[in-house]
Image 1: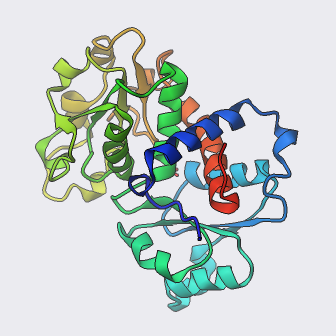
Image 2: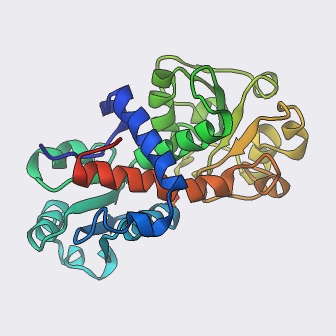
Length: 300
Ligand code: CP
């Protein structure tokens, strides 16, 4: 059976834990020992939306495992002549791609494609729904910090309604025994609030949590909302003063790209408690685990 990696919500908890174990294994393995893992495999990156981290770290992950990579350039492809997404992916499948790493603006694109393709599909971000490889790297970063996920409390702040990163964490964190709290303006809250997540007061939550996840403000989607960068920072940003309310060992996370001085103070991006660049580093290990699972059907 084709092993599509499209939503953490669809994976058993045991598989998610196994992928985290495998991410740990890759983070501790000397590189030359891994280069036979996906030798002769070809991974196609197909990004219909811009990306820096996800695309390059999938490419790095593939190369670390010995695979070759096609970075499909949508803007210079026959998509511009009207070729459909399905025909584009079938073409890449026909020429021999072994996995298709896809980013797309449609929340439900994978549900449509999965029954039609025999090549593993890997979700590199789908609309406002799920960003499962980001969530895996976020979970790995939390586990690296705290050794265990069960009982840990994460606070997600800001533009949660438009965030696929928050979408995946809200669905997955509680399944792993985490407490997930949300803070932000009413207009940027998900509707409804997902089960086992709760909205609370920002200043009251900050001293209680183990991790704060800031999110990029998607101002382009804030139709009719009178909340510019300065007022967002004043009311909901992780400012230097607010960070001082956090526990001494609580960490700061952000999936990036970052609007410095908006959702997070410039000074906090590389604060000793920030794990933002560690998240990016861990993204390679998490994506190695995902590619191995999709292509070889095994985790340890
Ligand atoms: N976090 C994330 O998805 O970043 P990119 O959009 O740069 O891939």
